[in-house]
Length: 211
Image (cartoon, rainbow, N blue to C red; front, side):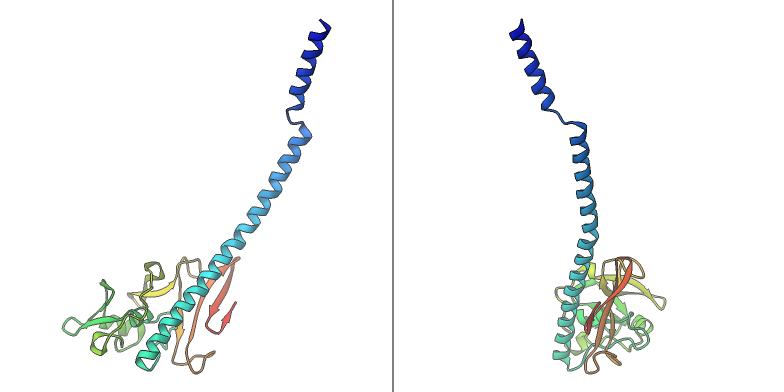
């Protein structure tokens, strides 16, 4: 009887020792809480780093396209003197075909995307798109993705603008600002910049600085 009792007691002791004590459970919960807080704190930093990297990468792509345009034509794409954020970069860099009879410019790489000559004048304050078939049109931005453009109303007409699909001061799309006629930071070239939201604050990335 005593031997059986001892064996039963040892078995019960082992069973009790195999479980967690209240203190051990509290320690585990505390560790999980600390790890969760660390992860939650790192997530915004990772998201901000992703936006920064994207802004820098797309800025470099756009600069390359603009410089290729300059090399081909001898001058930079025209800007909108009255509104740097409402520019015709999408149309100038993509290249267009022009139908004089219809007064319509159609994007070389996207037959479904077009703009009337009247809309060019209204939205961009320009007499037309320089990079058109009337003057050896060329697509200087073949790597352009659909997510990098958006239909936006400018002066009452819908046009496509280049931008970054991230949170910005005006919503979920940040248009590129462009000034080639009176650049303040690059007198012999052009100013190109975009404003995005990081940590609840507006940050600017441009071809003369990185905020």
